Amino acid sequence: MFAAYCQKPHSDDPMAGLVLGDRPEPKIPEGWVRVKVSHASLNRHDIFNTIDEAWKVLVNPEIVEKYMLGSQQLSDWQKGSSIIWKKDFNGRKFVDKGEILEITPQRV
Image 1 (tube, rainbow, N blue to C red):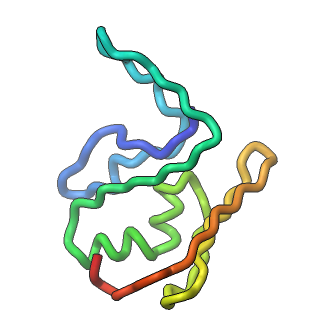
Image 2: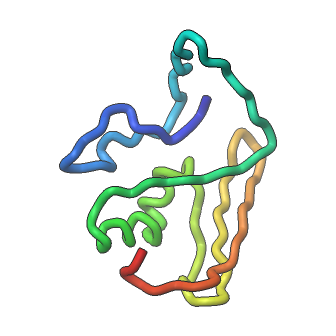
């Protein structure tokens, strides 16, 4: 599966462990089951760092591209503005859009 995933954690440089590519198939522990979900989008990112560094991870398009599977992020980061992620993948164009409802720079 093509994904952004942590190959090996690095406490001093968290982004160093991030890999973009084919993720190895997970080993399913005994007693667990695999549930396949298709046609759904869910993004959750836990960022463990200072507020300044966490803010950069959220708004810097070069960093966002690393954990959003190469997506281009577009926004002027103003309340009421749009936020758009664009990606071409295997000849298909993907666009995800949202609206910035509230924003307080350097505060997460």
